[in-house]
Length: 123
Image 1 (cartoon, one colour):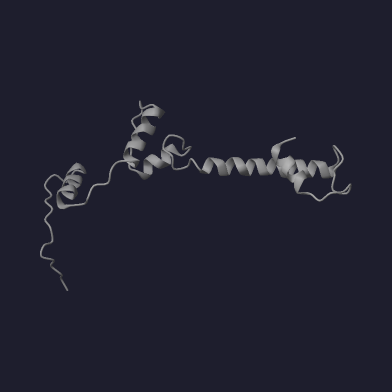
Image 2 (cartoon, rainbow, N blue to C red):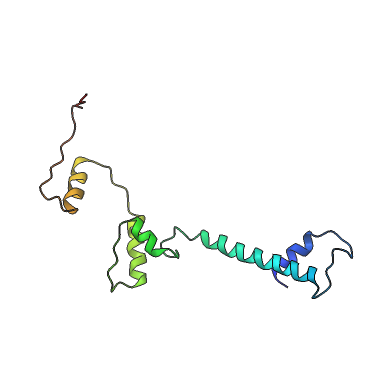
């Protein structure tokens, strides 16, 4: 008897009416409910690891979200370590130099970023 079935049995009221005979339809129904509860519990337990780069089952989706394009020769371990490094990196304070370097890394080599100081508003 599974843990879910034991829990279901303990939730039923006392009495002969609520005690299913082994193998009858009521017993099979209770087994089905218990099996379904186990399946739901398993899915819910796996949701806890959805955003964990080392345990997620959605590695490709997480890489896509963080802009990582894996190389065909990368192992799964390397891919997970790269994802973790990107996810848990220290945040940088945004400034003009950071924006300019990011734009240049993206291929815009002749871009210069200047601070809007004093602030200029166009109407």
